[in-house]
Image: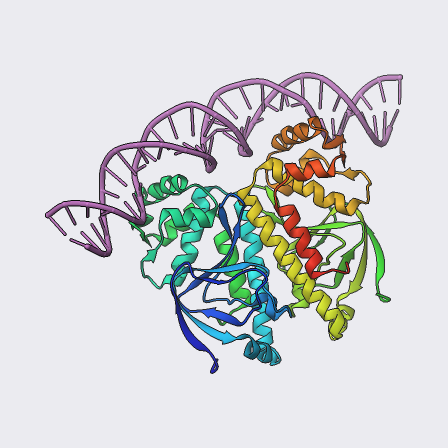
Length: 211
Length: 211
DNA sequence: TCGAATTAGTACGATATCGTACAGATCAAA
DNA sequence: TTTGATCTGTACGATATCGTACTAATTCGA
């Protein structure tokens, strides 16, 4: 990673639009990147969630130079930036290619499980899962998350997030106030969540054991 | 494809279980393969849908020999079967590898859009979309689909499928009776569907223009 | 041709979420 | 410390779907 540049992003930074050429690949450290679906009525929902276990550039890894989706920084923080040309030449190295291919598989699996989860589980379970995932990347820090923001990730109304979040707080699983949120009972939140959290986590462990 | 064997599958055939070694890759002709999520309570929902535009073996394409998901034949029919060893050696050919990499990207995109659709759109829209997708592969033939079956694909109750299907039939968009279903008004069904149908279709056209 | 099995229609109370709106709480900047 | 902006609590009727159950229609095999 000698040729990487450390960059810092604010939340909501859009990395690129659909159809743009990929000029760099990002390996998040503390930042978190989302792939979002946006619909005609302005509603949004998250399709994929890239944290420090993974990276962007899946299409580039598979030989395609232009972007198929919009990537947006969801949680501000740092990421390592690798220019596309350097990334592509690194792919010629056996080990690097192996890791990247594993990353693609992990992301695909995550997207599958999350998509099924969207259809099968309710807002409470999905919110719990999302918070657990973020908590794993936050190193004990509080997280800057508003209900409004979470509603865009989960594809539900803000009022629904508020209702469910209040419930979880009532039960002592999380705390929050004005855009700051923290997990206070990981185990309990896991119970409030669905099996999808564990499934994704163990798939990452299997595919990327050294991450 | 000289080394392919033409095989015929009944619906509901399970191709393999999680953790099994991939011994063959399938290129559906008339068959359709699903990747299913199954939950503790026995409920299921489709995570990916592989028809003749694509193939199985994504993990193998990316260097992993064991399966991460359960693949099941959802619509009986024919498929070309290519032994894993032969598939892997074909991947050394530039063109074949390019096509397979594009297929992986197309499937990933489809999974993303479908997953978001699960969270954002209602049963009527999702059923319409599913039927349109199947219709595209059925060459004008009727399709063997029961409401019960569709409920497992969409992750909703059978009664919900019946209600929505009756609506669509009322409007002249589809016909059905005892496990046989047909699309009678493609354009109308497209209106009943969500934008996700077109998004997936155009992504396949972009990534696999010759398919 | 009849009976069993499969498939579909439908009902109904319960629940989740929508869609919208407004008020109260908290924070940040002047 | 005030003020405006942001964030959260909450209400309420509407709608979608659940969960379940029972009945009716159709098909297929004996």
